[in-house]
Length: 292
Ligand code: SF4
Image 1 (cartoon, helix red, strand yellow):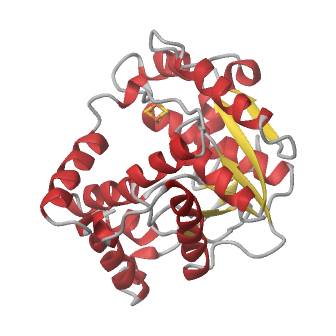
Image 2 (cartoon, helix red, strand yellow):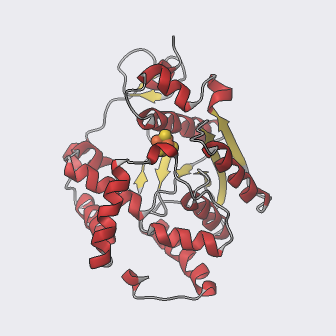
Image 3 (tube, helix red, strand yellow):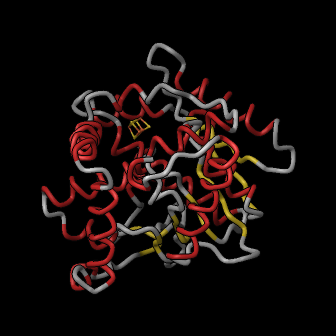
């Protein structure tokens, strides 16, 4: 690991990695002892590694996954779900909540996208809306204290670069390892936010975690992937650049740089599902998806 000037054998790496995650948890006060954690898992290396690490660290961590019904010619959603179920078989104490979008709402994500977007766009914004809604719903329904996602340093640095390039000040104000609970929205934490993507991949391989290698077919050609490639080039010439970029941003943020822009949007309760929404009147954006 060039940024740490460190080379470890498998045994020591498997001790080092969870210790790093624990340090991030303590540094940003992400989790408290005894809390019930809901880990959002996709079947990829990051979320499964996170779930595994939290269990090894002794946290009360259950998982949830959303079957989006995406095929992409190789059964993306089905294969992802199989990987997660296999992971669970090897950890009998853990619980998994499965949300099948088609079974619950009558349409897969690509089908909703075809109906509502009429092929104009990729379904990602809509998919994100559905995922956020379902994660909040499951966290509230089962009384979890906190929702943990597997966003790693590469994800966070790419999002930061995107937000900076377009000066999305509102997004910059909200980009953080921890988002506090708010009016029915679960507290959200990112314990892998200081972990490089390749470190999470190495951990998954060494732990024998069988994860899905393929990206979602809709991720192809995305600007996030392009920004990750740019940052990787920077990292080759300047090891640690990605981490420095993200940490410097968090430092500026903690010193109040984006405070004024963090003006809280007023939330109302959706009359259909009851979840908080910034829509002033009527159903939230999620419920409107299913209203003819
Ligand atoms: Fe959803 Fe887009 Fe991510 Fe695929 S790439 S899982 S469609 S947000």
